[in-house]
Length: 205
Ligand SMILES: [Fe+2]
Ligand SMILES: [Fe+2]
Image 1 (cartoon, protein in one colour):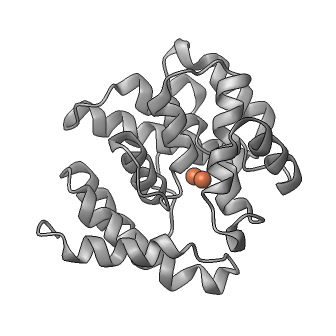
Image 2 (cartoon, protein in one colour):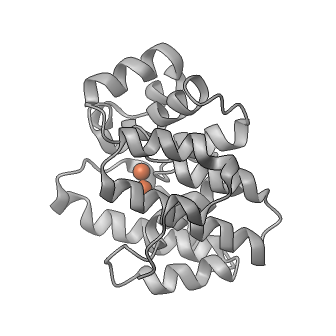
């Protein structure tokens, strides 16, 4: 697997990268670089999505993940409350569902990111929201398919991302989540099951 560094990215991302280096673990920092790089390559080849927005969303999607749940909840309740109340009660105490909405708060307040599509993508990148836009869907898929992810479905999901077949990629990820989250002690958001039903009915899948 190719090792990325901050020098793999344009200097305009240096403030974001410096913030990540200070606030997330080295493993998460590398993961964030790989997700951003995958989005950079995907938007270069086949998508009509702003490449800078995709890179910023990829870099920042897990910016809150090393905070405590208490800190995440504090940020969300103060500044991104709708995302919290959208969650079913069973998911409101787990970092899996809190780090996206909390990350969007950090992106907006600490790093002055104000593009709504980027903030929405960071908020919803765990994939359990019905109103994800194209950037959010791509981020959700790249998060799963980055080269460091050690799951058998990864290669196929990456292939589908570059084919622009987001529905098929999301269906594979949703099935993986429904199968594997319970054994990882992560509460299952009911939308994942609904998503499998919706996407299985889709004529493109
Ligand atoms: Fe995440
Ligand atoms: Fe991630």
